[in-house]
Image (tube, rainbow, N blue to C red):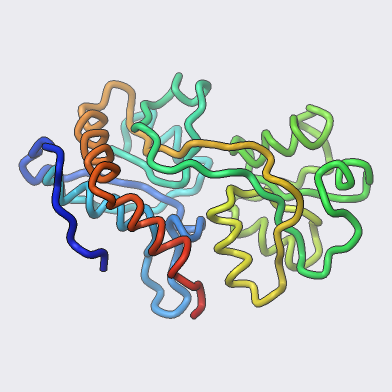
Length: 250
């Protein structure tokens, strides 16, 4: 549990309103299934619990694949989504974002014994090397446009429904590279007992935000809570808990 911190900014009271939040639970340490307990936990769960306390909402969680997430929010099937979602202008055409709650950098994940390439240029130079990605995600676009040739149909990109499935394919030797922000990459590497490692330099920064249906009246209250959590040190405490102190599988 996080230590209680004083609230320094006022937040609205939504009177116990029920809010349906969807997530994928495959993105450690932001949201994932604890291998020891089977419980869904992570940075975003703690953050949303704190937001809920501050603006007085009752959160109901549902699980959804990434492919269904933005369309489901856009169509108003759910109230909010948390999934390490990168804030991008093209997505703003379909959903509203909260203000950023976390900034991260894209990293290259390979098998622990990988010695054939050490950076994205060496990976790109060998046509036999394959990359795992989820369609429509930031790692997919970084692979296509920053590493390879800009062809979204490039056969070197193997698509998977979930990030976890891509990591399993990497470990099995079916692909040679997976991309993720440094938060999730560090989580998977720490839990791999040496089976995975990070190579190369960061491939750019990205900001994460929660998403809502366009015009949602939840955006302003959630933003107020995020700002209050930033001011009083709660976001920093979450970062320490999940990125420094927590050890997956420990």
